[in-house]
Amino acid sequence: MISAIGIRYGETELVKYAQTDQEFPKGTLLVVKDDKGSHLAKVCQVKKSFSESSLPKGVPTVVRLATAMDKKAFEDNAKFAAASKAEVVALIAKNGLDMKLIDIVFPLDRHYVLITFSAEERVDFRQLLKDLAAYFKTRIELHQINSREEAKIYGGLGPCGRPLCCSSFLGEFPAVSIKMLKNQGLSLNSGKSTGYCGRLLCCLQYEESFYQESKKKFPDYGTIVETSDGPATVAAIDIFTDTVKVRLKDQLTLVTYALEEVKVSE
Image (cartoon, rainbow, N blue to C red):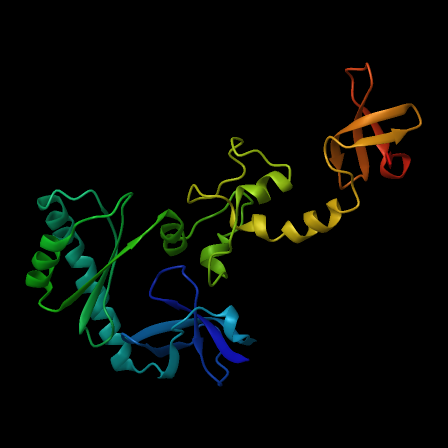
């Protein structure tokens, strides 16, 4: 097991994890280090134990409590990044690239700059890289993200009215699929199945095991069952009321029976 705390970098809503054996209250400013450098981070979740497989690779480690010098370096970097956004956008336009600038981030020692952008397709930014290096005079890293990752960085409210799961507590995106959508009786075209990012809701995964387990006691759609009114074909099920809707022979109207009132034909 690995001990880790939840952290946020800067003003983003994005939750990351950092390894530590120490206890830190929420709101504490720390210096954390990953394989690319040191960063200022704020504690947003107290220490918990995680299995190694449940944490993403390359989890940073807590180095120490942040000092006044660390805070000043972070503030100076944030001001420079904010002042540079207009120039970066201008360089993107100059190179005729279809990409959207998301964020500019420096580590505390400013030995490189990470520029995050979103784009629908792959972007050839070789000339842009040269222009950015000439402007920042340091090593440049360009990182392309998709709409889910963009929502994770910016945060917001989901259709349930609560802060987005991905930006408030999820470390990694869960695997969701259209099969889960169908299994839970939701429509892809209803608008209720997609999140702030326009992709399938991450929370579909939370109840998937409940739906899978509940449906085991029901006959499949199209199954021939015996009822008190004769043989019928299963047309719908309701796991919350334990009822089955069937179509009797020579009848168009569906009839509802309690689950225990129908038996699968041998």
